Length: 247
Image (cartoon, rainbow, N blue to C red; front, side, top):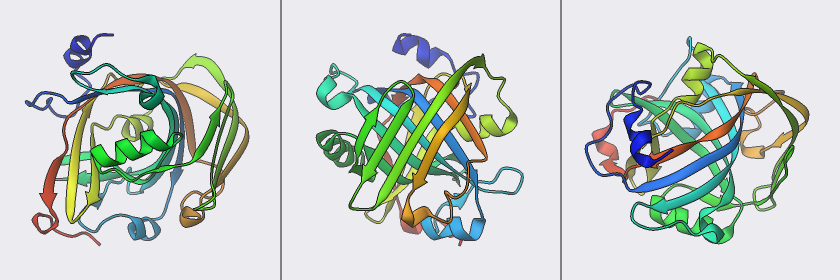
């Protein structure tokens, strides 16, 4: 699907596309979604007080999304596979800010050191390197500095799911809010609607000591997607004092 066609598909979006020219193209492929219902008091420890935690039927959620980042590039340049393609795991929650909803990253790991360095430098997102491997039915990540471990062995079912209201709420997010250097950065994105399949977990280890009270027990909701093609705009910076506080 061409960028032009991606930009023409907007009926599923909660607000109109930005007027500015887009800056980056990327693909989030073969994505594994693991979602946990969490307690608000515990989650507030990890979210800046300037961002309001979004709730589904009165309860907050945290997700671990493991996927293959591919073909990431600036608008006017070709992608370069040694840097543009890498495995990524992000741990995220759901945020409301200035009448828009989006995600906030508690953690972002990438499977290539140079890719993480460049992504962190350009985006100001909290990328860090972890040792990652992936095959058709296994995804593994280790980070000794943080004592983080992730391992999943799974099967993908052939069915395409009719997404529930909760699954739409968890996946159809078109902004990212992140704190950096006394600012809140807003990143607008656009992609076609996620298509989900059922996932059967055969073996799972999720061991992130910092988030042990969030990512505990088995996930409450799981899913898999072949992926989406994503358009991203330049980040917009706002001073912390421009926000009211929530916790």
